[in-house]
Image (cartoon, rainbow, N blue to C red; front, side, top):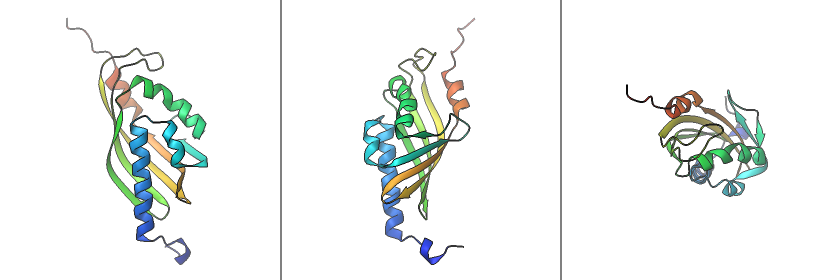
Length: 149
């Protein structure tokens, strides 16, 4: 049940969705430096089923290898739903593996990886995010293709 003090106006919901859409456009373009414009100073990123939680500098460090490995990466945003101070996103990470990623040399494979995330907005900035990425899908798509027999 929503309490009157928890109610959020339609214009605020639209503004929250627009903020998340801009964040994802910059992040999808691998503009990690540009993330500062959208997130709160005490931002925390939670990786569900993945690495530990990260503040903004830690998140940028974890994402930097992907920016190098997938220089043409972008996020295709399929759905944004806002409720209260939260925005849920269903999207696909798309990029060509053109650089080394950890121990895996470039494969030239184009990957399409589903991502679900929920963002909490406070004072016009993204304060927190919970992300679920299909890492197994990415691993399968980057696996070397066996040579024909």
